[in-house]
Amino acid sequence: MVFANLFFLYIFLPINLLLYYITRSSGIRNFVLVAMSFFFYAWGEPVWVLLLLFSGLLVYVCGLLVEQHRGSWKGKAALFVAVASSLFLLGLFKYSGFLLDNLNMLLRLNLSAPRFSLPIGISFYTFQIISYVVDVYRGEVKAQRSFLRFIMYVSMYFQLVAGPIVRYSDVAAEIDNRTASASEVSHGITRFCIGLFKKVAVANVAGSLLVQYMDGDLAVLTVLGSWFGALLFTLQIYYDFSGYSDMAIGLGRMFGFHFEENFNFPYISGSVTEFWRRWHISLSTFLRDYLYIPLGGNRSHAFRNLFIVWFATGLWHGASWNFILWGLFFGALVALERLGLRDFMKKLPGVFRWVYMFLIINVSWVLFYFTDLSRGMAYLKVMFGLSGNPAANSQIILALQGNIFWLILALLFCLPLTRVVEGWLEIVTEKSAMKKSLVGFLTPVMNVLILIICTAMLSGQSYNPFLYYRF
Image (cartoon, rainbow, N blue to C red; front, side, top):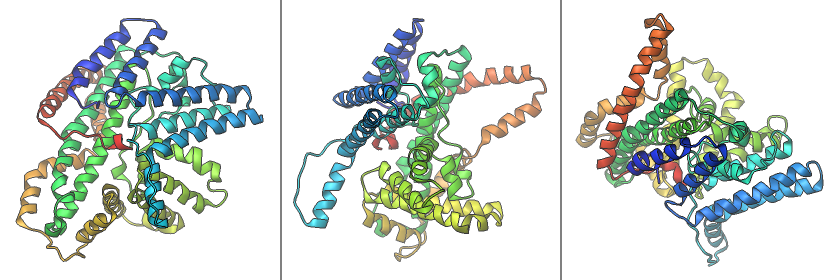
């Protein structure tokens, strides 16, 4: 099941909210969230609920043992079991086929083994339960005594299948005791609707347009067409994932949870380093706190640690060499910026820094898109005019003309326009009461309009994937 789905919007979510709020008992509310989360997760592959339960139960028990025996060999053993088993299951289901294929190729073997379908969201909830047990070991949080509350943390459908990665320490207090006022629920609905619009009106449209360029015949692709295709994917992946994060954060607010922001307008960055402080923030901070710093961070072998983290970043996204190269590509760029490139770029006008960043990001998404490396390299050759293909033709000119207004709006909404609007409101509305009244009127109207538009578009759309479900 996906959020941008008529069944979810008009049946699943209303029933969930009704069942949740008709009772004041926190225990029953927790049970409702767990039951609805399991139903949501089982919608596609019911068998993976058992894997989720097993992982959650194992780490729950290990967390109790870690707290009870912290500092002793028993506590360390429980920590090792929790982390190693979680990574083993992730490796088994996500990377075993990739590893076997590469062993067969390198050693000229013909080994065969069962191939597993990828449990949705396993990369996200694996990192969440690892952060929990490590934080318990560090003494930063107390082990959760209630299995119902712990499995609720692991299985919350708002962010289970595609993030953001929610640390237990960020929601520990709300797991035990939370409230959601009418204004909080209203804020959550608005945030959800914004994310829904990003997904349906921009990401889906970009995805349906780019297929003819990135999946078409490269022999007839023009240079301009290749850049247009890459730009469309640049927009699709941002609006798809940030839209999902907005919806997850909004759903959390409806039920009393406050998740950290996962995107902070990454396409306004002036460097690759800044980009990764703004893009998928929950993943970047997780790898910093649980991998980079434990390896030694900036104190010892900084560049070695940097490349290990970026190798892990690429591998986390998928069991394919293109993802590994994509991660190492960014690792090399971040290393170059640390060695002096960033200081040099700071001396240049802001527009040059932005162009540098945006061109690199467009190229990087080409590496990300093509799991077939040979096709990815062929596409890059077209982009840089190395394939002998024509620069442009009438078809690409007509495509640009036909989509120019949509494209301009999509690019504009990568900017922090809401902050500009809020500043404008501060100037126009001298009294806070007037501002609240205006916002209080416009917000529900906007939400209703978004729902109408998205419902109409979803009714006629067959293309409606969430890209990060596959990670």
